[in-house]
Image (cartoon, rainbow, N blue to C red; front, side, top):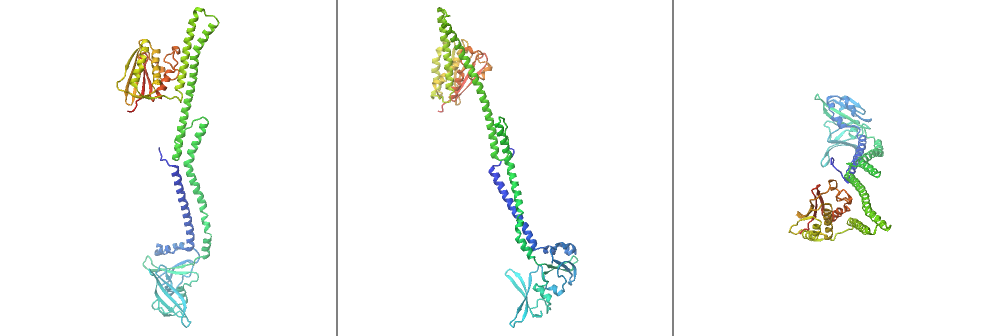
Length: 523
């Protein structure tokens, strides 16, 4: 076929798997949208992208304002002395050099933590710890103690620094600015000068995050129309492979019911529907052939009835005429014997016709069966022809026989095969002139025995050669030749019941050759 056939099971499994994958993709996409929405609330500003933007080094600071999203976020670019070169957004971005040193590095490995504590006397002091993340956990790399006036008591983290201001401590403790968090990121400008990027990060909007978490189901509502679209698409996809061939089959069935023939042809679709289409076309062809055969049989039946009526009407009419003449006393006494002889002759002909009809109907009946036995066909023919030799000679015909000496074993019903040969020889004697030579030849041909019954007489007209084995077809143009036209039909039926075939080779004025092929018995 021009395209690869698919099984219905394969089509359904494939589309089910694709539909499942589509649903998973829809679920994954919706989850990704929900996650992006939630992540935007958690991280409204992409500070990493801002810190890595090459425009920062080139001094194109105005273009960086696009990063800022939400209230409270801002950034400033400071020179090496801490002076503000550019500022955008909101937040506390004006710092002294000492305050700037207290701001944690954005990508630093160390973290500062400040918290108040009391000593043994209950005096409030402040502790500042510098920690580093290592593979073993948190490691304290610096420990500074401040008194109540924020003076360094021990463990100074910055060499030479002896005291801190409240704003500096607030930066260390993360309490200043109040609603923001500061980070700094050193970088080098395009001209090689040192710069500092100061970031003011607004706190998370806890209320918005809570609302987004509670209303997350609204995002999943988007999956419903997507699911509907996917379902409609796959219904259309499967229907596109199944519906058209089903419509063609339905149209063909409806046309068949209306007496019209509409072939399904290559209806496409899955393999099962294509097989149904081909089977339906084959069924349609067989029904059409059966209808033609039925019409032929009807015509043959009508012809048979007409022939039977003709063959019976003629002798019955003659007999009735003679009987009426005798009954009315119109026949002189000297002529009565001739009339009675004519009645006897017609009665015998009528009896022969009735017997032929009976034999034809009997061998054509489905329950007719042969009584077969293993027979040497050579010996059977010798005995049969020996019994027929005198009748053939008295009729003025010659007989030539060629039978091999090697046995040819066949499964035969001797009586019925004899009847078939009687019909062939009887036709040859009836339709040929005196002196005609009859020949009977037997020869093995592979697994078949070829029996030929031929004559060198008038032959059979070409217009009857193809139908000579049909009922009521005779070899002569006139039906008054004495034959019923059933003999060869009976012969063909008997040969076929033996598992053989019979054919005719004939040319006008050159004789007729009947060839019977019978299966040999396996040895």
